[in-house]
Image (cartoon, rainbow over all chains, first blue to last red; front, top):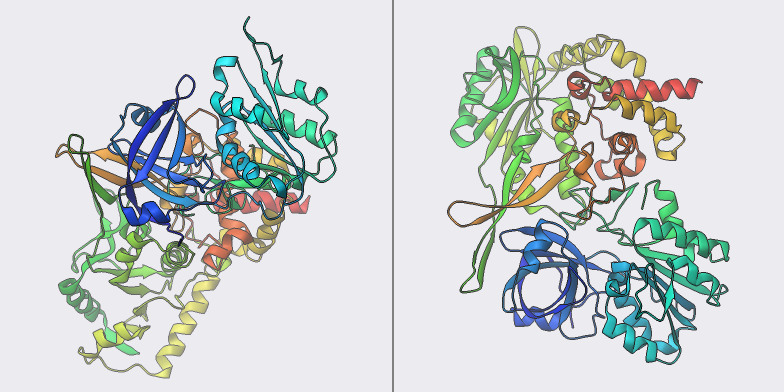
Amino acid sequence: MSEQKIVTVPEIATIEEIKDEIVDVKTFYLRFDNKEIDGNFTFKSGQFIMCTVFGAGEFAVSLPPSPENDRFHITVRRIGKVTNALHDLQVGDKVGIRGPFGNGFPFEEIKGKNVIYVAGGIGLIPLRSSIVHVLQHRNDFGRILLLYGSRSPQDLMYQYMLEQWQKIEGFETFITVDNGTPEWKGNVGIITTLFDKVEIPVENTVAFVCGPPVMFNAVIKELMQRGIKDDMIISTLERHMKCGVGKCQHCAIGRTLVCTDGPVYTYRQIKTLGEQI
Amino acid sequence: MYLIKKNDVKKIAKALEEKYTLYGPYLDEAFGQCFFDKVSADNIDLNAPIPANPPKHVVFPHLETIMQYKYDKNAKKADIAMVFDDVPKALFGLRSCDLTGLQCIDRFFLGQEFVDEVYRHHRSRMFIVANTCVVPFKQCFCVCTDSGPAAQEGYDLNLTDLGDSYLLEVGSEKGKAFIESFNFPKATQEHVTQKQKLVEKSITMFEDIATESKAWVSRVMNRVTTGFIKEEVWEYIGNQCIECGACSYVCPTCTCFNINDANTIAGNTERLRTWDSCSYEGYSRMAGGHNPRKPIEDRRNKRFFCKLSYSQSKKYLRPGCVGCGRCAWVCPGDIGLPNVVTYIRREIHE
C-alpha cells in the first residue's frame, strides 16, 4: 500500500453509515468514491483530516479508528456552522476529504511501556485510535489503563466500545461521571477523583491525555505529582485549522504549527510553547 | 546596464503594458495618497511617496477564489476544480522594501515543504521593475532591516534616478531579453559610482526612527527569540492594541489567511481565501468557543514574534520586517514595529 496524501483538492467520500453516539455527537462511516484511493488511504493514528461539507465549509477532525480497518470514520460534535451541516447529512450523501495531516502518536518510542489513557468527555475521540492500536499490539506494552470521565452517564462516548473494553483482560478501565443518575453504579466525581482509587504505575509509564482544558490542567498536575515525567505525557491538541499544510497560521502555537508539527505533543513541548492549551 | 532619459521610463512601462497587466505607484489626487495598484503607463509616478499599500495584494489578493465546486444534492455528485490566475503581471517602480517583502512571501509560499500552487500561478508570470530610494521617507527604517534603500536582487530591471537621467540595471535573463530591443545607450562605471554615492547619501538621510534603532533590531530579535521579555512589556504593548488588524493588512510580509466556503447565486460554491490577522480575537477561537490565545497581549506578541524571532525568520531567511514603516503609520495605538523595538530596548537598558 502506498501512502496517499490528498493535499489541495478534496477527494469525494460517501457516508455509508451514521451512528448516534451521545447528544449532538455522531459517527460517520466513510468510504472514498475513487477505488484507488479507497484501497490506499492510510494514516497514522493521531493524525487528522480536513472534511468538506459541500456548501458549508471545511473543518479539521481527528481520525478515531485504527487505520488498519478498511473503511474509516469520523466522530463529530455538532458545534459550529460546518459540523451542523454535516449532522444534517444522510447516508449516501457525499463529503470531501483532505489529508491525512500531522505527526501521529509515537508508538515506536513508547514500546514496552505501561500506558495510561486519561480522557474527558469527547476527548476520548482522538484517543480512541491510539487505544485500538495499543490493544491490537497488546504484547508490545505493559499495563494498559483507561481513566475516562464525562459529565453524566448519558455523555459517555462510545458506550458500546467501553462495554467491550471493560471485558478485555489486562485492559484496566475506570469510568467516572461528574453527576450520577439513580441507575449509575459507577464512580461519581471529577476525573481526578479516580487517581486516588486506582493504583497507577509511575515507572516506565506513558500517559495520553485529552479533554477540555480545565480537565487537562488538573490531570497533568496529578500525573506530575505522581512522578510521571513531562516528556511521558502525550496529548493531541486542537486548533482552529484552515489549510492543514502550514500556511494559514491559524494553528500556530509558539514556534510550532499544530497542523504540521502536531497535533500530538508531549507536555514537555507544550510547556515551552508559551501558550494556553 | 544602461543610461536612459527620463522619458524612456514611460516607454518601458508602455512596452510592458502590451504584454502584462501593469501595476505601479500612482498618486490618487482625490485621496491625496499614493497607492500601488493597477495602473496605466501614463499614470505611474515614480517620485510619489511610498504607497499606502505594499504590492502584496497582487500575488496574494485580499479575497481570492482558490477552488470552486458544484454539488448536486439529488444526484449526489460533486465537481471540484482549483482556480488559478494565469494573468501575466508587471510590477513597476517597486521600492526595495516591498521587493524584499515579496521575496519573504515567495519563500513562505514556495520555499517550504508545501508549495502553494495558487500563489505560484500569480508569481510565475511576473515582471518586476524596481526603483531605488534615493530619498528615504520619514517613516522608513529599511537600513535597520537590511532591505534598502537599494534593491540587491529579485528584480528584472532596476531604475535609479540620477537627477537628469536614470540608471537602468538588468537583474535577470527575462529583463535582458526585454530591454535589448530598445537600444538604450550603455552606462559607464562613472554612473555606477554616481548611484552608489546617491545610495550612501540616502542612508545618511534616514530619520531618527532608523538611525536610533539601527543595530538594535538584532538584539531585540535575540530577546524575542529567547523569550526574555517581561510579561509587563507584552501587556503594555497589548493594552495599546485595539485589534483593528491594520498593521497586518499593510505589512508586506504578513500572510495569515482564512478559508471560507461561500455559495453563489449561480448555485456554485467558491472556496475563498481572505486575509486574516493574528490580532483578531476570533483568529484562534475554536468552534466550541475555547480560545487559547484570549488575552490581547498573547495575540499581539505573536505578531512581533513572527517579525522578530529567529525561528520565524527561517521561513523568510531574514527578519520578517522589511522596514517600510507602514505599521507605524497606520497603527492607532502607536505600536508599530519601531516603537515595539524601542519598548523592548528600553527593557534591555533597565
